[in-house]
Length: 205
Image 1 (cartoon, rainbow, N blue to C red):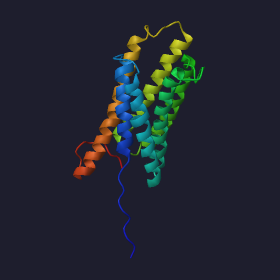
Image 2 (image 1 turned 45 degrees about the vertical axis):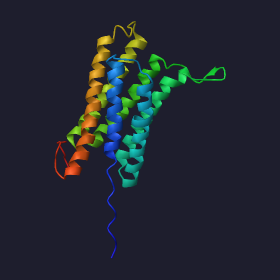
Image 3 (image 1 turned 90 degrees about the vertical axis):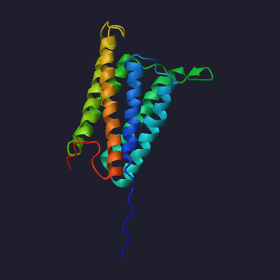
Image 4 (image 1 turned 90 degrees about the horizontal axis):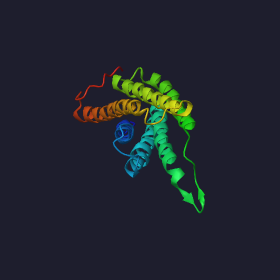
């Protein structure tokens, strides 16, 4: 008589919390212009936004969840790349700088590609739950808004000052994105812990 396989924990809430918390913090301090992108958000990007999501992605791989593996590892590495974009221009090895600040054109392309990736991944959520759909839909919009912002900075005479209100709108949208992921993570933890629906997520399957 074969033994029943041991139940494994759901790694998705870890990845969602890492993504959600870091996204909310970045949009609070940067796009809502409440402070600079300093060591707090960069440390969160490395540890919780980056490493925690990558761990979640590896655990999703072990569970055979291709969507979860691709999503969490990709967005974990997005956060690592975002941190590198901010710290490499400031790092010097000997007398040589390790990187130069990314141009507005480069940042436009960066966010555009991530927006296209997220838009594609959105279709993988259509049979899961409504909150996850909101996470990917709002994240797609967030990346495209950022791409628009940097295209305006790159190809028009507009400055960051001119786009201050637009940037604040991006910040609000980013907080909605982060909060929806944060909510979904807490809902999955609490619903499992209580064995019933404590926080609804609009489950479809």
